[in-house]
Image 1 (cartoon, each protein chain N blue to C red):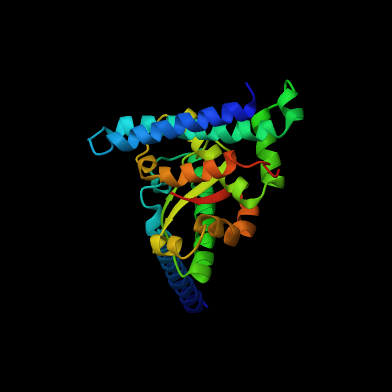
Image 2 (tube, each protein chain N blue to C red):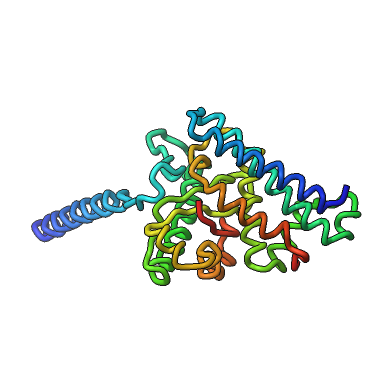
Length: 147
Length: 131
């Protein structure tokens, strides 16, 4: 009986250790965020500081980081559409009225921009028309234009 | 002075600043001066479209106690043609940056001013704003 209890205890301990190890590995992996080049230097760089021991798990920096993440996802969805329709991608972004307007224009520069501009009478307008539906649904942007 | 006259005057003023900017561009000017100049240009161009809109909306022009800027934004967002919408919303963002965000932003220096001039000219010379 005692031997059986010891074996069960030993198995449970091993399983617990494996679970802890796996969850640590998973959490370490999820901390790695691959940041697209076009947002390098943006406010997304301001990460959440987990080094201080705060009572609340939700603070303003966490919310700010979540908003940044949602905004990044929207820009990424624009990028995917541009890849599909124009075979190009966003090279750089500028959000000049960030934190001033509730929704603002997203300024972008694109790969092969000059070529694209030469191929159309008004490429900037084409850019908006292609993304119009996504922009109408956007929480952050009411227009897209070229830098 | 009519709103159309104001729109024309602001347009000429901004255009003169750009011409001046181009003529001094081959001399080295500081980033601060460049940004300062661009703030004025963006803000004036926004008011070109603002007054152009009011010229074609006498009811809003005559109304008092209304947040004219928001009404114009909503009308253009909901009823403007795609090009008007693009130029206005682009300028609205640039004007907000120019007037309210005073930190230096080197991206402003990369912005294509000549393209903007052409865009504003297309709107200011419209017979009807179509909105």
